[in-house]
Image (tube, rainbow over all chains, first blue to last red; front, side):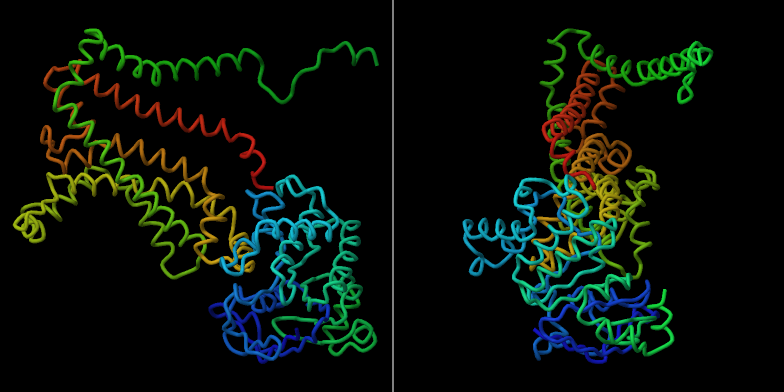
Length: 239
Length: 287
């Protein structure tokens, strides 16, 4: 599903987190929102997920206006920076949460829920950990469980906030590969936020560089490297 | 090499033994003298005339009415304040709005206001001399010197306990788990019952126990608004005072012992729950 962002702005009180920005994300793309902290990248991601509402501008999902759509109705799989796993539930119940939360008519039968959760546990290559609690997992395992939980709702897109931020370098490399594989297998339009330019350049099809609430440049990693559009992009990618 | 091995290691992370035993002993004596001795005295005094005296005291209609009154008040006040406390804590920790600091101050107000003043405030507001009170009495809905007044006083005094206990926990846990539940399609209510409530249940339990202890034990505010009418508006703490002033010391201490037992029972309940759920408690602690 393609995503269109039209003249989107967000203000928190008197501070402008996002100046009017426009961006179009083709269906099935893996997009990185790259920028230093305070550049507005997380705000943009949260607006897409329905966790913040824009001050002005529009968001279109698959050509339809989704600006006022509630967070529940967006069906956007969201992976939080600290993963936000439900600490009082087992891994199995965490992943099943979105399925159980559906209205009765649309809720799968218990056997179907078990089947789907087990399939997701296999997808993230952790088939044995369904009975554990989040604090019994390593950081990398938590991240993958959060991804499985987001995928369980059969999302229309995948949104990830600094998905590798809290991990050490080795795990980070492995999980980057894991995300790429899951993206390629599901074909979901995926947007992730990062401040690590190497990560963005290596993983994404399309990199959106942001600074001070504005989009500085949008392009393929090779294009951005070859032709930085502004001084900021040149400095930021050289660092 | 051998020199080092021969010197006795001096522990650097603790005090010398003498200082340790002295400090621990001091604390133990203090606890025994100021915590256990009074508790034991209450039971000893109650049993001064044996079990017969205790049973006679509990047969007094005034004592029974006081026990009923206190239990009824607690049974209404605690669930109400648990609900208000959760609502207030939810609003304060999960949303940003104007006047938040003021709301927090309001919640703390009962802690800083003397209970007697709180009782007096109710008397001034609803008493026979006020316009509102006069109208209420004329319409047969008296508040002061009646059940509603005692309930209002208890509600006011015990309001902060639940909110104060769960606000820090909710702040520490942040909003992301709730946000995650919403992105997974859960409604606000479902999020509250399946994510927020389970995460605060221990703090909530402590808050409820504290609230309950205070609701049953409150004296000052209740003494002012209830008028201490025997058999009608007297609660256990006010009845204890009345018995004692009338030199009915066995009755006074018996009622005090029942009150103490209720407190001990809640403590026991808390420990039991903690013990039974120790494993889950350890597993779900913040990672």
